[in-house]
Length: 634
Image (cartoon, one colour):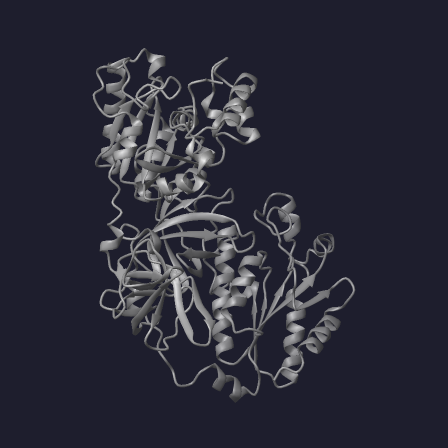
């Protein structure tokens, strides 16, 4: 081990004193990004090494690993400090985001090493979401590449204002100033095109240490600050959020006993004092703050960045997902928006499918419409698109099932930035930035009526239901649904049967059989079924409805207990043997594309309310079984 290299002895001697020493330093979160092999991991390793943040055992392991799997011969491979995954070391690339902490005499740092490969762009976006500064690396031998442009665009999109352009590996071009100047000029032209107003350029060598902690003698023509000094002194506008109107997204209701009720969360904007008038959104109810409580006691004032519990003078209804705001300057509430979306999943966006949308502490169902366009980050060209594929960046309209409290992302990351979550797999599939609410969301309102669904149902002397028959083509859905309706009719029940083929002659005649069209087909049918149930009817639907997500979407449209999923369970080989309409034969021959069970999937219900097997039952027997399960229908 290098005998000169020594970490801060105070860490071992007096950890409390060490922590006290660093407690009041400002914190800078930054990311390193750029194309693959630009030297991001090596740079971070060098920063950790030069800031004396590597302990003896780590350094010994690093030296050993460098000889065994390193890429720098017998010299230390600093990238190994960050690339900890076995797959990263084997391939010599960064795959996942790696976070590292280090500190200097002037500032504390959390740095995220983001992968350079295009297929891991989603990981880079995750790392950038909380960053104050981005170090965009460029290999001096290669210049500005596709991923350089992509990452720069994403950094600007997500609102990072401090950009450092680090032209790395200057040692490999003999510290040539002319090549450096040409790269900076090339990047400056692109930066202006995408809206990056300012950036700081510097020539460095992460491996050799040039212009990292001190100015390099190899580049006397560079007169700017070395990288670490720039990171230590760059201004972070910590007061920007504090100068905005007060915002507190409620994380939980704090009620430890009968005598205390407060609302806890992290203040995302502005400040608040006892006596301030506040408004709870989306309800719009107002009250006055009586006290502000923390673990360390009550506060006379709290500001953005602090986690607090506020108490009200009135018993106002307020719960998780609500936003407490300044009474005279509240954020907007809407259920329809335009947004930029970065798609982060291997499976493409399903237009019209219901996803979970998480915005701050709010969680709602949302559907995304066909994108207006996607963005080519190399040319800034707007391209037509029917969906969003992995790593695509597009602008689209989306709608939520209930109003959410929001602000444009340009004014608030907390109330303007959201993620989309697949309801079936719970994977985070997209991230986005809200632009504005759509005008129609403000102009179209629910019109109250005096006669509601209860009155309609009472008049018919029955409980509204939606009997949702699902199964493969040829399973017998329509036949069984027809038999069930006939028996209900004999029981003087008011019914209506929506059949898949019949609906496609009118309401859905404009839809095909692509996955997106199938989703829209079921969405429309679900809306119609809901209206009929509101009218007090027992609605029967016979649709393949192959996707669980859409069946679940319709279930959530209705009051609990009114959606009855009936799985007509017929094996594919049996349904295909019947082939009443000759569709399977056409699908097998390639004449019919996107046919469920052949070249399009069917997701069978996991816990249907009723299951019937048409191999074991006739249609009449299946209908009788369903009626017995449903009784009494009142």
